[in-house]
Length: 102
Image (cartoon, rainbow, N blue to C red; front, side, top):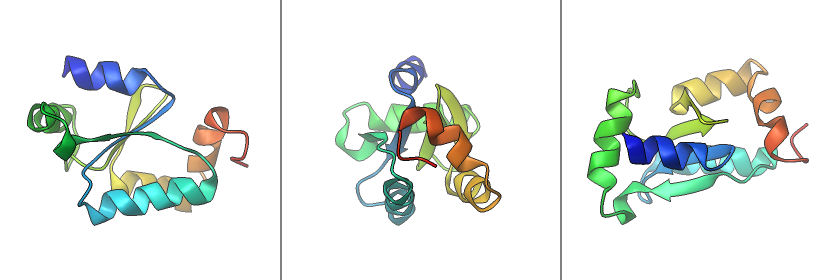
């Protein structure tokens, strides 16, 4: 869990992902459309990926990926991010992390 928290706090917008995950791809495209660039950690390409997946689950993620952290805080997975976006709450959270986020 320490590595996850360290990585999550190193940048304002952090995405834990797997390169083969279609939901992770959806979140990446959403962020691209909004105009922000997350720091992406592909767990299937990290030797400690399995342990990081378990840590994300212990932190309350319903699924280990995608897991989005904004400002060092776990925001959630696909459901939480899409709900925030549809309700208008995501862009204000992302605004500090990229000048193109309106």
